[in-house]
Length: 133
Image (cartoon, rainbow, N blue to C red):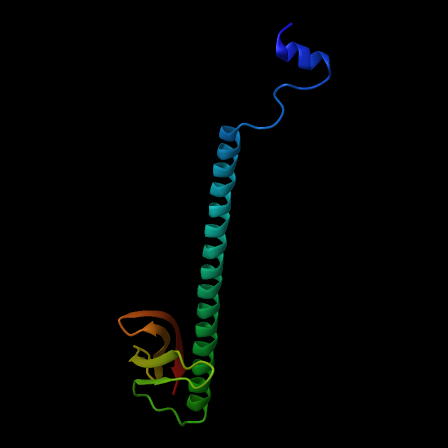
């Protein structure tokens, strides 16, 4: 009687366990899936950071626009182009205000831009509005 048939007859499996090749293939598959998951998590964190910066910049631009609208209503608006930087905790953001004339008398277009990042590689959020004098 052949040996494998003899072991099977006794209730033992002759080929129990995994071969080294099967284990290595399984490790490659699991490793590839793990790398893909880590890459996806890294992109998610980066996207979340980008969205947070854009949201903060938009909030700051709206705040600056509200200040300009208030100054306009009080008659204290300086209609020259302006720029500056916020204090803590927003010191990495800079702002610029540009005024443009419109064809309608007493109305001017205002663009508020909030910039952040390196000077040679800025990211920017801009909002426009119209102010009545």
